[in-house]
Image 1 (spheres, rainbow, N blue to C red):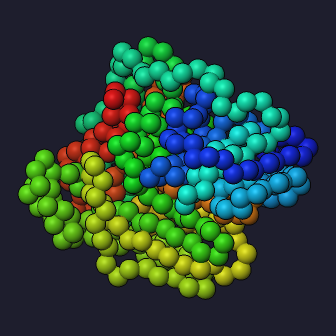
Image 2 (cartoon, rainbow, N blue to C red):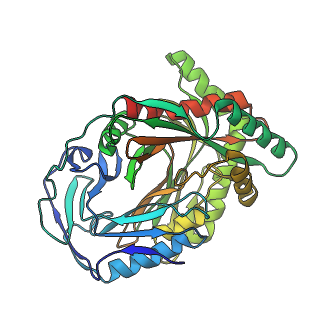
Image 3 (cartoon, helix red, strand yellow):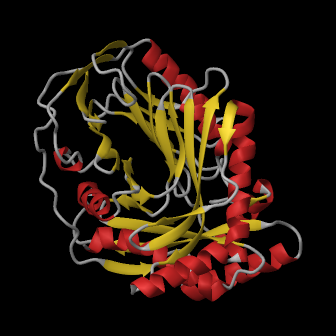
Amino acid sequence: MKLAVTAPDRLTVRTERVADPGDLVSRLPHPAALAWVRHGEGIVGWGEAARLVLPGGEDRFAAADRWLRDLFGSAEIDDAVQVPGSGPVAFGSFGFDPKSPDSVLIVPRWILGRRDGVAWLTTIGGDADPLALVRPPAAPTRLDWSDGTLTAPGWEQAVAAAVDRIRGGRLGKVVLARDLRARAAEPIDARVLLSRLAGRFPACYTFSVAGLVGATPELLIRRSGDRVDSLVLAGTTARGTTPAEDAARAARLASSAKDREEHAYAAEMVRDALAPLCAELTVPDEPELLTLPNVTHLASPVHGRLRGERSVLDVVAALHPTPAVCGTPTDVALDLIRELEVMDRGRYAGPVGWVDARGDGEWGIALRCAELDGTTARLFAGCGIVADSDPAAELAEAQTKFRAMQYALEG
């Protein structure tokens, strides 16, 4: 595997406690923002001390982990805070498909963090003013929307074809995604989208890495020492417009055989992937409901303790792709995705998050997101397809999932 690397021979890293910085996203001085924030806590970064771009390949997670171990292992680190996310950190996002060449890791020059009442600033290299405002945020204007790769009727046909394959016995579930495009009058500033998403969806993990911006409800894995946590989401309904309708929709979701089947596939895979890595593992027998401002999900929180020394990227490699974003069996579902979606997902539905020099980190699945490129944004939404799926209902669910990023762009 040939890696595209931009990095100094040795990093010089200093982390010190600082006064509470307030809203982390508001402190970002540049549109090229890096972020991982939930309920106001997390880390944001800017500048670039090192970058790794990985080609496609099944071993891309292992290659990224080796590079980071070498880079951080040779660094001169002065970390007065010593919590997950302090010291040098790499923000990363990986392509969904092993064939995708889109995976990237970025080590920022400055990282501002807050966790459990402790705030810190990490500086890598020079000591120039890290909060000098390069350009104030400006909201997107004059948005022009257009279909992505497939029109709505074309995507419904793809769903119908997937249902036929499933009923034919080739696979149990496949997740099909569609895209939507928006064009603004001026380059889109990630900070505006981050601020809107963090304000409206505080329980989600609001992220920005190399132009991929979103707010995912799905925690793929968190590692803190030997403890790991995951949140499995599969099975979704839109929120109701009244409390009574909302409660009725949630009750239907909780009792839906179709959605419970879809959720069971995802939860069982996470259990099977984590069991060989963990000395202890707890997976609930029944899912619970996770209610967000726009949708309600079936959710299963998973907790475990690792057996042996493994970084968070080792665990990411074992988990990706989950049935929640691919299907089962994985290989058959992945081939069907390539055939029916007629597009490259890029980093949509791939792992996104951060890892520090201790191997701690938090990684989500890049959902409810858009890929920014100058004045354009490419939005993504996906749905789990099983034997009982109805194409029109799945299209409506995808349109509901688009709304988070449409809100982020339109305000």
